Structure formats: C-alpha cells, structure tokens
Length: 240
Image 1: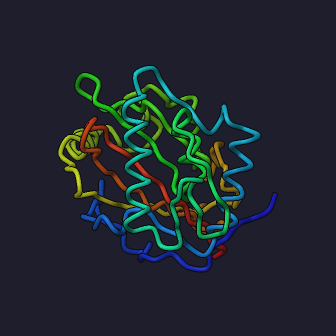
Image 2: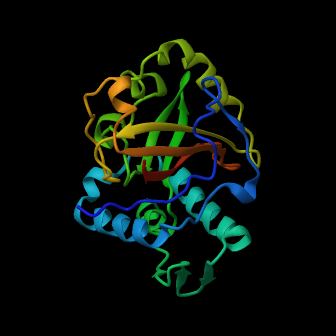
C-alpha cells in the first residue's frame, strides 16, 4: 500500500462547529483540486477498474439524477474548474489525463473527473435515500451496506445520530439550488489507506494518538431539475 498524504488541510480542524455543523458555501468553492490530485485520481482509477462493485453502486430510478449530476459537473468545471479543459474528445484534467464523457455510465465518468466522492440522495417518502454513488475513499463504511437506504439507517452506527437526525433531514429538505452547504469531520487513523471500509476498533483517547489525521470536507448541493441532493466528500489524510 502506498500512502497518499496531503501536507495541509484548508480549514481549522481543531474548531469543529456543533452538529450538524454546516455553513454556506459559494458555488465556485464546491469542488477542489489539491496537492494530491494526481495521486488520488490514479488511485480512483485503480479502484474503479479493480473494485468497481465495491466503490460504485446505482439503484433503479436513479438515472435522471445521475444524468443531471454529470451534466452539472461538466458545466461547473467549464465555469469554475481550474486546470480543466472540456472539448469534444472529453475532459482534460489538471494532471494531464483526458477522460472520455460516457453518458451511458455517468457515475463511472464522474469518478474519473473529480477528486470528490459523489453520493446522490433522493427523497423517498419522509427521508432521503442513497440512490447512487461513486465512493472510492470510504472512511470506515461499506457502500454495499448503505446503498438504497435512508439517512437514519445509513447512520445507525454513528453515536448520537438519532438525536440530530431530524435536523439533518431538515437540512436536506431545505438546501436550495445554487446555495450549497458544507461541513467537515476529523479523526485519527492508524492506517492511511484512502480506501478504508473497515472500522478501527479504538476508543476516542487512543484515536487521538494515532499517526494519521483523516478529514472529510462534506458538501450538500441541490440539483435544480430532479431536486436530488448531492453529498460530496473531499478526503484529506495527513501524517501528524
């Protein structure tokens, strides 16, 4: 295993906001390209090739939201994507790789375009359900166990989540197109692997002494046509 480490996180992880801890985000700040872009994108390509069933999942009925998300990301990259070039042959990334635009496989295309993992959450009854995702860098959870499940079921292992679940659902209900929100987390890890589906069984005191700090910059964005929510995750891993 090769560790892919960043040297900095562009926010103060020592000052977390109270849960759910969200704040407004400008549209131009939604997706990021950081110092580990090339290495993380190469790892994404490997995982999508070798472990597609583990890192990409879709459900029936998610097609319209997936199609809209792909076009939304392409439009976003054309307007805001530093180092990106879009042409008839595909998308030329900042690391020099050109990605063909395969509209028949939108989540796979998205997985090769941007550094973020992308999860589509659609309203089904009273809750938002995970209907499609490209999740190359899970932090102690398995996509297969969460796909097609609602928010509360997805977060069952998270301490105190039932107490904040109504606030999180209101957040997903209330986010508006063009006005994304963001939050972050930060946890100690003993293993720096980006693909990390297994939990590390350590208590909080031990976690604070582990050699790596992993932080997820999580954003929630509303697609204007299907009204699906997109949960994006930009992963940082640093040696302490």
